[in-house]
Image (cartoon, rainbow, N blue to C red; front, side, top):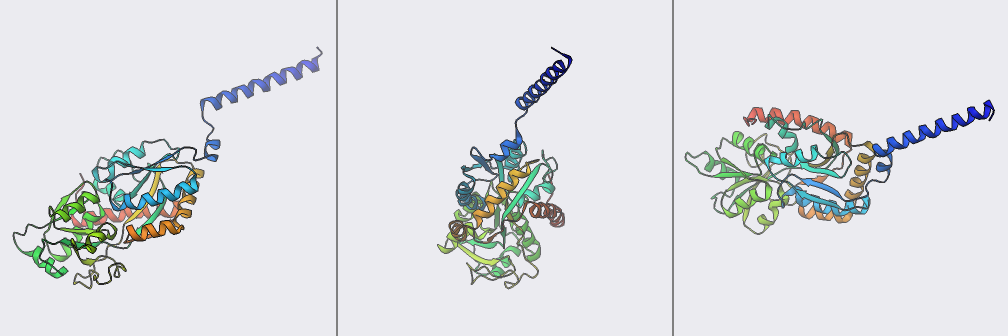
Length: 339
């Protein structure tokens, strides 16, 4: 073998050795680019951090059915209720950043940053915003038939009486329903007592059964009970009347000035550092799903008080950051303390 042939053989052996080394690296570390290119190739878990039957749960089920069409894989709900959504959020914060574990949550997610001193995750840095799929337009003030009030002013008069024992329910401490109810207490000068439950459905059931008497809740979950006569709607917290309840006045029309509460949403996030191609894939599927007539019809029937949004990951990231600050200020002002 002459010198030239020896050099060429050595070069080929060196390149082959380098290729084997790179192959070894590929075995040790998954090919992320390929995984993203085929995403998703198995079912996706969508964690709901509240009990089944609440507004969020009811809204996400038909969305999951549409996402199957555009993602080609099932998206199934996993209810992990407790601590105002903290238990479910902590689970997702610790999940792999592969797009197969996501969370669908509400604006209480932003509130928890101010409510709990010792959260084991950071609301803004331990999650990847994907989209706020729906935005709220207001809550309904409801009472059961044991409450002798047919108007908001009659309810306020009851709440100002000394020794009144009327209670209002909420899905927990520090959520948007709790905040709206305490703002009402302050603006109306009432002293209705707060009773927290583990989710919207148990909270609503308490009012229907008479365990609690009053609620300020999303229209979607209370509408069937209003229509059946089990609950009475006294006012709506949005800027204008709700089309589904045209005879129910706004808070201003009912005599409580400067009371507008619309700031709630339903959104989907992933764990931190979710690769951008996966974020884009999920966002595209969400926006496609929102346009489908079947989903629009389901939301019109079961998610009254919300409008479809589908804002971009960047838009939702800004909204989330703004809400963490805004709700923190509101909670300090009305005296809801962190724990």
